[in-house]
Every structure is written in structure tokens, then in C-alpha cells.
Length: 142
Image (cartoon, rainbow, N blue to C red):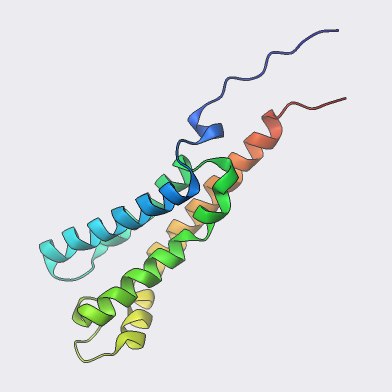
């Protein structure tokens, strides 16, 4: 009977953060990016979009496999939450100054839809690749 050596574990297969911490990290970083972007330009710009895409990829890389679902639904929820907050507090940052919260959310989603789609695709794609490598590397019992 020969024993096969198990492949070494890595951040790719194990992750480093449990789901709740990965979600909290994602929300905190997203809000920090919003504050920095508003301080620099007074509205959400391409800077926010690029940081959002990197953030989506980052949380997909650090979450533990058991909590993939929490991160898999995170990108659209973060974006809707940010636009809802901005629509209530400062709608001129994502829409016209006189727009209400629902219109500000819809305008924000429309203006930043490319970042949302790109970030979401990268997040889900990364999670799928990590899942596939976990299944491939898992020991089989005969």
C-alpha cells in the first residue's frame, strides 16, 4: 500500500479570513474608498470603480472555502448599500442633487455598472477556480 503525499496547503486553498470578517473587511475598504474618492473629487469616479474591482478580487482570495457564499453575494450588496447611503446623505455624489434615494441608487448603479459587472465576474470566477482546485486536490477514498 503506497501513501501519497498530500499537496501543501496554501492561502489559495485555505483562505485566511472567515466569512464574517471577509465581509466586514470588504465593507470597511469600500467605505474607505468612497471617503477618499469624495475627498479628492467630490463624487464617485473611475478611482472608485477600479478600487471596487480590486476589492471584489481581494475578498474572493482571502475568504475561507467554507464561507464562499457570503463573499459570492457581497459585491452587489456593497454597491447597493453605498449608493443607498450616498443617496440619503449626499445624492449629488452619485446623481442629481434633487434626486431621491431610489433615483440616486439607480443612477449610481447605472453609472458604475461596468465596475459592478467586472468585480462580480472576477469574484465569482476566483471563487469557482478556488473551489475547483479544492475538489481536484482533495484526497479520494477508494
